[in-house]
Image: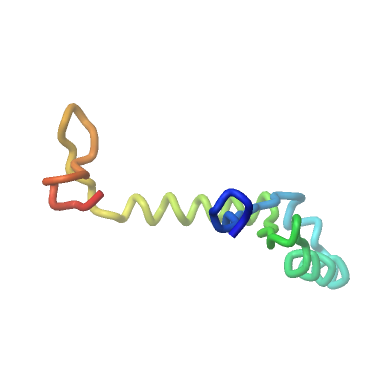
Amino acid sequence: MDAFGSERPNIVGVLVIGRSSSLSTAVRKDRWEWRRNKVKADSFTLTLVTFDELYQDFETWIGLRKMEPAVPMTNGGFPAFGPGSGQGV
């Protein structure tokens, strides 16, 4: 607990830097993996990704979202979530 009576926040950080093509040699790949596993900001771990990896992650995420069943829409086009909808909150 801190001085304000709450627990320390759980901070998540992502650092996007460079292109995958710049990791063309074994030495560069080793350095990237070392940084990916060791870099911290104020003792919080950061997730390091290249722009290409981020693009691939978004592409995968969007593809998965397209495969999910549609969310029922009510109230003028808003998702039918909340009390009484049977969907939870």
